[in-house]
Image 1 (cartoon, rainbow, N blue to C red):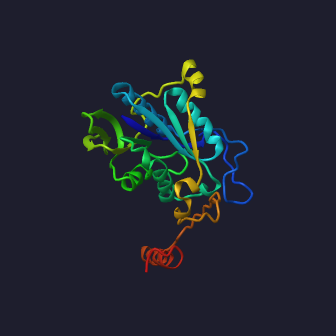
Image 2: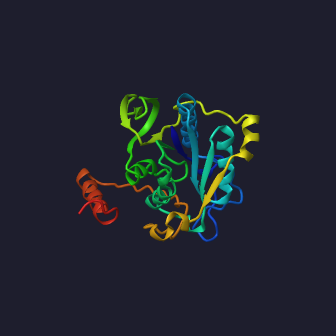
Image 3: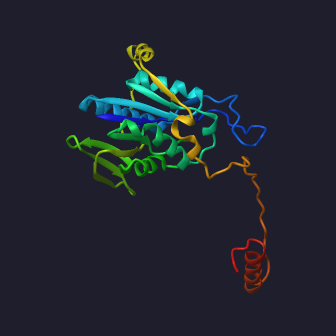
Length: 259
C-alpha cells in the first residue's frame, strides 16, 4: 500500500496576526508555524493503515522552506519520506493551481491512496482532495471519519453527514480521501522516531520541476485588510403606514435590497 499524505504549514491559532505594510500578506514576525490540524489526523490514519497493510507513507507539502519543520515532525511520527514543493512562484496560488502543482509532482508515484485534511485552518477551501481526485483520475470521498480496507483494490469510508448521521461508502483504488478532525488520536513522535529523521529523504521540487509554466493562477490578491466595524441605529417614528413607507424607501434607496 502506497499512501501520500498532504500536510500544510499554517499559523498557530494562538499566534497574533497582523497585516504587513504592503497590505498583501500577513506579517510573519510573531507567528508560530504548526501543521494544519486535520492534516495531522490524515497522517495518523495513513500510519494506521500502513501498520495493518504494510507499505509506504509519503508526506507532501507546498510551502516555504520553513515548512521543512512540519515535514520533519511527520517523518519523526513514522512517515517514510517527504516531498516539498517550494518556490517563490508558488506564493498566492489559487486552489486549482495548487492542486495542479501537487498533481504534477506526485503523478508518477502512482499512489494507492491520497489522504488530506478536510480543510486548512488558514484558507479553508475544502477543495484540494476533490481536485486531486479529478486531476489524477481517482475516486473520492470527503468528511472521512473512518476507513476500512476491503482487499487490495478497495476501501470503505465512513462519511460524516448532517444531524449526527454517517454513511459508509465503498471506493475503488486509487482513491483520494479528505479526512475530518477527530477520526483518530494523532500520535506523538518518539525519541527513536526523531533520531531516524536524519536517515529519511525529503525531495525538494521547484516550479520548473512541476510544469510551472503551465500553472497560471487565476486569482490575484490586491488588498488584504481588516473590515472596519460600524454600527448605526435609526429610529423611525410615525403611523404604521408612514413607518412602512419610510422602510420601503430605505430598502430601495439606501440599502438597495428592493427594486
